[in-house]
Amino acid sequence: MSATATPETTGTIDTKTAEHRAIRFENLDEMVREAERLVWAEREGTLRATGNWSLGQALGHVASWMDYPFDGYPPEVRPPWFIKLILRTQKKKFLNAGLQRGVKIPGIKGGTLAIRDEPADEALAHLRKATQRLKAQAPTRPNPIFGPLTHEEWTKGNLRHAELHLGFFHTM
Image (cartoon, rainbow, N blue to C red; front, side, top):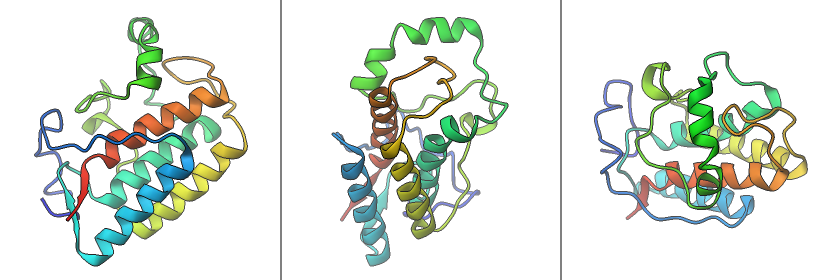
């Protein structure tokens, strides 16, 4: 698949088994630098995607989920109590070991939100803005699964989320 996905071509790759880079971000600045590197590679024609999304979709998705705890979650993000109960026991794993590939949010078409295809440059600008806000302060809303989080936990969760999605992009 090329680095640019279209609605007609998305959703066809099994991301549980697709090629995925192991990435580990220690801070938000590292994450932004990697996003910048990938946008540059896309401009140069040296970016290869092994997932279902374009780079713009992935960056915009990560940025939007970074914004939700500040601006409010969409109404669809209301996990049932039993899901919260089960997943709360895995909080440390999510924050430290990373997120599983191919997981879909039940009841949401396409399995997640904020997957609008947009130019990578625009999505990168959104990611930079969302990152600056997260660096400056902790979100005020609780996480819909884990409840209240510390500033460090919010940061770790967003880093793990970015690792998941950016791992599907490779430079040639």
